[in-house]
Image 1 (cartoon, chains in turn green, yellow, red, cyan):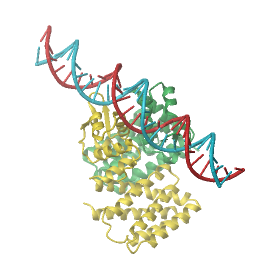
Image 2: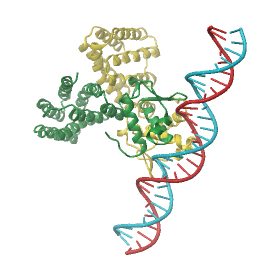
Image 3: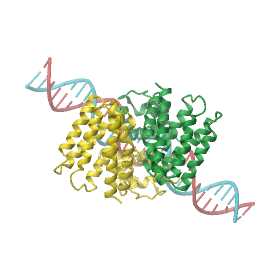
Image 4: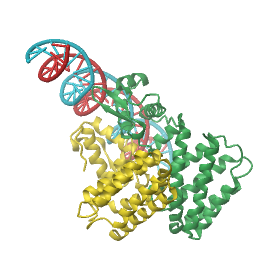
Length: 233
Length: 233
DNA sequence: TGTGATGTAAACGTCGTACTTTTTCTCGCC
DNA sequence: GGCGAGAAAAAGTACGACGTTTACATCACA
């Protein structure tokens, strides 16, 4: 996990955020700032900044005389990339992975449809290139290389959609795909059908066929959901 | 706008965030912390905490010797509710409104489909109640009352989807709907067709007809997009 | 005995200052 | 003209003091 030693602040933030999202502090539980300061051997100043950030993520709320209390899960800013990373690294990663995959299945088809209408020639080329890269690395246990192309592919689609909200989901998708490859034991080579679908999406986008791009992407999403059903409860 | 006088921190954060999202500081422009401290007449401590939060939203990056520099728009955490509020209050609110509405149009149909399969009896009842409320307030310039029901309706759908990522979009949708009612001159009463669609969605969810709920919600979304096309460039 | 006003202390909120660290600019030397 | 050493600037960190709010306990009064 990204401890990113750059600064005391980051270290404490990561540790605390991870602990909270992992449920080590129960909902409604309190943390005292100077306690944290002692525990991490930093000044209260640093802890206060960390708490402020945690508060801005709606993970905690800080009130006088009572301390820093953990908010219920439903109130967390679950779109914050850091919160996603923390939860993905924690205990309920299957649940989280499912939520995110459902989100993907809603977004990506629409994004692909938009991309078919808006993608620049460069984006079309990039798409084709990544799809071919996926084909080339889809056999022989080259999972890591395949992953790189897969992530790049979906990122291009989201960017090409021309919608900033979609585009910003690129990191989330990357996190999901990486999680799938690294944690769920992805036994062997990726599903050939999925690889083909990616190539076809690239085709459809290149040809400006929005409906087809959308439908094909929907199939990819359905496949991802089914894959989840097979592996998780 | 919510100045929320609760604490110096909030006041400075709101002011700075608003200024940055409004583009008052150019991309790559620098802000010096003690300058801000003087400008708002607060201590550097407070400013530093604000900067940390702004940094956690990816609005700025703070580096030694150079100062706090504003990041390019594409890197902002546009899912942060506060960023959304700031941008919605600022100059490029039309663009922002469009992005968010496209997002809605991708999410809500899927959410409605899930809701049809998962909604509890209580949620079904709430849905019907809100839909009826919309009908009751859809005539006679009772826009504010209508808005309340509209927001509640969509919130219930998103919650009933059982997906936390969808559920957390309730605030965003609320913001969009409120923005539409308050800023775009919503000349007169809401579109009767839209009202009917809401009633039908409640019906479909109650009957567990996922496909129909999804399709109807898609129609609502299309309507919202068209409405935007009519009013904005 | 119950209820309400009051006091107190615990926690965060704010501030000022001093020191450290990193980065970059500049100046001088080769 | 290029390169390296040093100085300066700005954020990072720390600490101590005081302010402010508020939960909680205590006490007085009915």
